[in-house]
Length: 195
Image (cartoon, rainbow, N blue to C red):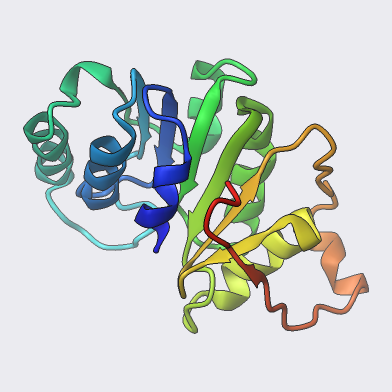
């Protein structure tokens, strides 16, 4: 469903993915959006997955995927944590960003806060694991508390928000959330042509 929604986003723009891993999503985004610049952010060190792999080989798989779809020249590989990589991206420059990195509640909130200013008006911020039971309590609260009614569900596992000039975000940190009750949120589904 997310990839069908990508058809509504302009091609030839600037896109970004936080949490690239082996590059499966990045490959599909590159194929659909044909970016002129694609920021690929991942430390490739297992820090948020807590497992040991040959991370150089995992990154090489991602590079090969992007090379195979003809996007290698557009790629800017940022092998660092997302909180460090934010300094490499100009404000209001991103047309589409997909957040799929560290799924811990505070990390998702920090990615939203850090990268929202990087999205141009009319651009889209999206993310993974919207309604997956094992991470719903981590991903959904920061998305809902930040965007409220502006968030849309895309399929069963992704979310997105179109940045309008009047799209306000709440910057209250997660440690303050315990003072306000969290209710189960059911986002409106993304409708065709809404992006």
